[in-house]
Length: 187
Image 1 (cartoon, rainbow, N blue to C red):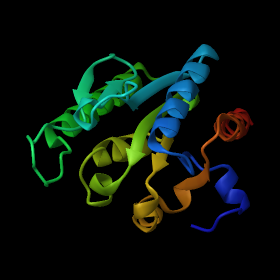
Image 2 (image 1 turned 135 degrees about the horizontal axis):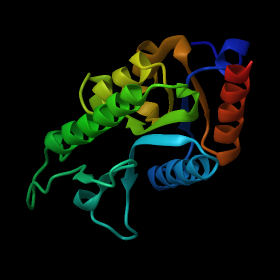
Image 3 (image 1 turned 180 degrees about the vertical axis):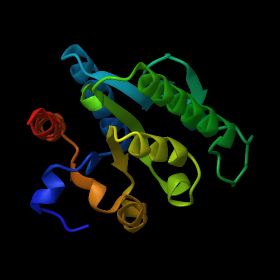
């Protein structure tokens, strides 16, 4: 995926990078609130990172139902394995897929709907995590806002290809992307 080309400016997926995890998740939450306030239907999941929280206290919050799923599991003292909770990730992805299916069942113009997915990280690069939610959103031809871990940027480019553009993590970038999409869809 080549950056800066005209096709990228109209990409159905915007992936933000360039800030720490807390800043990016706060940006996604702020974007969800702003889009919703302007009449956009917002589906998806974001990470909730309470200030001073322990690693295993991070939750994925469903933006439609408000349901929460743990992102990490407590492996106990001295554990060295990956603490990601596959059951929590699977439940979060399933919730997003249900919300997408419900939106499709309603019918009508889908240009008023965006799916926000907290991150494309190592799990997604390996075909797990929120991968099924990404696939469901793209299959439904819905716009997607997400973040991409820099460590899996090559896998992201292979996964999303020309459907996505990468942008700096700022609300202005998100608003410009959405404005371009809605302007294009209104033509």
